[in-house]
Amino acid sequence: MKLQLLLVCFFYVLLSVPAQSRRSHRKFKPRFNFGKQHEHLNVIDDKIDDDADEDDVDAEWVFKMQEPDGQCNPNPCLNNGVCMERGSRNFRCDCPAPFKGKRCQKGPRVCRRGTCGRGDCVITSTAPFYECKCNEPFQPPNCRQAAEVCQNNPCKNGGTCVPDGTDFRCDCSEGFEGRFCHVGPNDCYEGDGESYRGNVSEAQNGVQCLYWNSHFILRTGTNPFTVFEDPDGLGPHNFCRNPDGDRQPWCFIRRGRRVQWEYCNVRKCSTEAGSTVPPVPTSTDDLSPSQFSTCGKPQPMRLASRIYGGLKSVPGAIPWQLSLQVNTRGQNYRHICGGALIDSCWALTAAHCISRNSDMVVVLGGLTLDSDEPAEQIIEVERAIVHNGYDSDSLSNDIALLKLKATNGVCARETRFVKAACLPDTALPYGKECTVSGWGATEESNSGSSHLLEAEVLLINSNTCSRPSVLGNTLDDGMICAGYLEGGVDSCQGDSGGPLTCDNNGTHVVYGLVSWGYGCALRNKPGVYTRVLHFLNWIRINMVA
Ligand code: ARG
Image 1: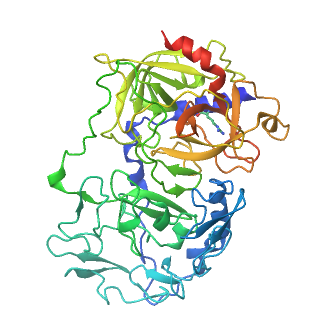
Image 2 (image 1 turned 45 degrees about the vertical axis):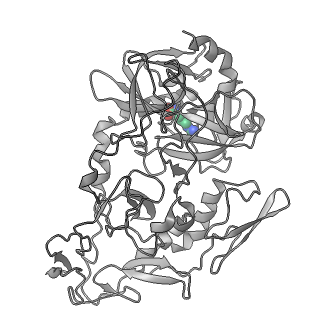
Image 3 (image 1 turned 90 degrees about the horizontal axis):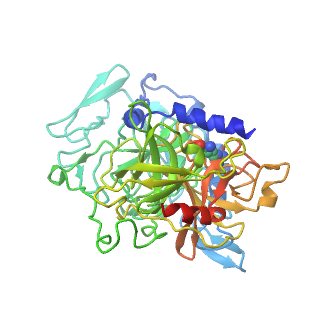
């Protein structure tokens, strides 16, 4: 049966799109076409906002992902709720009005089906606790009636409104742009755009950004005003911002029933061109070329946005994560697996990721597969050492060491974005929350995520995992399972070989490597990982070569 799984993985490998050719996949998202099919004074049907009733289910689901074990750290209360410990295992959230629920996740059910007709229902803190942001030419208060096109000139900064059937366009005055001419000539971002406070509200694919207080975002359990590192620039608007240390301003967009994020169509200020070079590594000078000064210490963790089962990783949070890429018969390199850097010239991955007769490189320090990033280091794999007990049928001993090729005596350079994880030296308790990361398949995309995602999973006792109703008699001593028996959060195809890291008193150890699973995120089918602790001797012996 596991052979079938392996075939599935192998199939994924064959199907995976060359990393370079995925560069533009986001551009094909459809444009919303506000108001196009509707005559003016048209009353719209109820289907537009048909998912409001799922609020609670979604919120609960996201919280399970980060079950805090009764602690107040991290704060389990949403929407600015204040957490209070109750005994050693429980907590209580004091919720500000109008929020309720164990974790203040239940907002007022003000944004219901059709509440805001052709518009976005945004949550406010004063009664009636919502406001409708209408899509032109639909009108407040409920965005159900459309004014005559161009009747209330929607174009800003002296722009002229030109009717175009039932839609319109704005002819902007010199220097202004955007659908509503709301983007001025000096509207650009510096550096990574953390300080950007401009007016661009359109994603790179042309889709209008959601308001930061849109109920579509809040109902996923993510409150942008509380989860991000620097929510200062956020407000009851839909302008692009960079509150989480990403590389440029971005925003949430809605696609059907889902909320996604996307980089924005915002210009980088030209004086800044070329100044995005990452900081020069400082700490390698007095080291021998093949060794890093530390392991297991990520950049101080910044809060990430929570999107479905995965978290969008921020730069430096998982600096040991690598993308293993192969090139068969002279094609472009493409991502096939993850891996974990354990020293300047050494990385771990899964044995089933190694294919003979293809050139391999590892890409370190990058977050996105579809764009070149300044912090990226691309290093050739000199040699892959596959465990000689690896069995492609049972996936026993699914581990391989990658020896990286040195250039001028240096393999990976230690930077803010590239660091090694430590090897574990002790068994960790079941129930411990660890982090799995990768570019593998998500509930949104079978072909994988272009942005590195991470998710919290729990280490599960092998006895529990070997129950007939769970994975049965399929695990050996070199495997450990992790995830949630209720399903929902898991690694998946394309994550293989990637790290399952656990924070052991402030040091991150690579406790597992993504190996296999029955489907992904299914109930009673947690993911199975190579138990790195079981292979310490093998790793030490082979790393000397
Ligand atoms: N074999 C897969 C790969 O090559 C990894 C599958 C992990 N599955 C899971 N449910 N955790 O990418």
